[in-house]
Image (cartoon, rainbow, N blue to C red; front, side, top):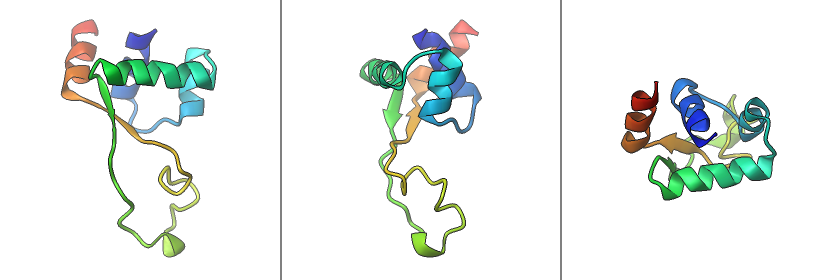
Length: 87
């Protein structure tokens, strides 16, 4: 199931945790654990970024993961290699 999650992350530009959990038929808590497992393996990492826009005037403030306090994950080079090998 971790490989399937990694494939989804590689192939989809944007996916919310709720969407990912639904697509994998798992709970949000299990999805979080799966992301942590992939992170410990070096396949995904948290994006360390701060919003450079002024949120008050931003058209995307209602959907922005940063504004909503959600974390943003990205696939690492190691993750892309594993996904390519499994494809």
